[in-house]
Length: 285
Image (cartoon, rainbow, N blue to C red):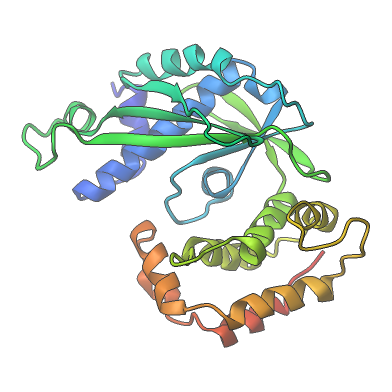
């Protein structure tokens, strides 16, 4: 009979070392969510971001981090009370990971922690491969962050997973998730590293006919200083801001960013400012 961990890993059908590593990371993410759920974390917080989109809506790219937001602002919120539950959940399946909170050097509403475990040890134990070309010091590292002062206007839903045991996660609903991604596309400071993952997710949302939580997007844009407080945000204004962004993107570099996270590279063949401007006509609220 398969163990729960073997059952979860088998679902990924990994065929090479990189795929094995990504499968392991994704399983660790899901077990961590289960541990947080059983520790009561989702009484206060909600899951959002690329990993939420992958796990609960079928986004077909690997996403590295676990992103959370409190339902309501609480500058005194502490991550540490949930660490023992996380480690216990992981170790119960034979996943030996430690968790450590990141010490901030500047004051911020974002609190971060890292899950860390030895790559070679886990790959050998799970896949039963005796010799692998992996440095013995290589570490699997999964960052999770929580926004303790979230923008207003998000709406939530509860979703369920059955493995490693049945558990419930509160997450941003699809229109609120889409609003967060639109904010990232419009406002993220890409500098020398254009985040093609944002663009890939943008295409995914439109392919799912996702609508936009416009009040939540407005709150995010106001918090970023892109909109004045109390100004009116319309769908036409959103389209205009997006098209302005699409005019300035180096699409070759955007493709380079997302390529390691997807299996079907042909999905990027049409990427150009004309492509993104055209599909932006389909935005809905």
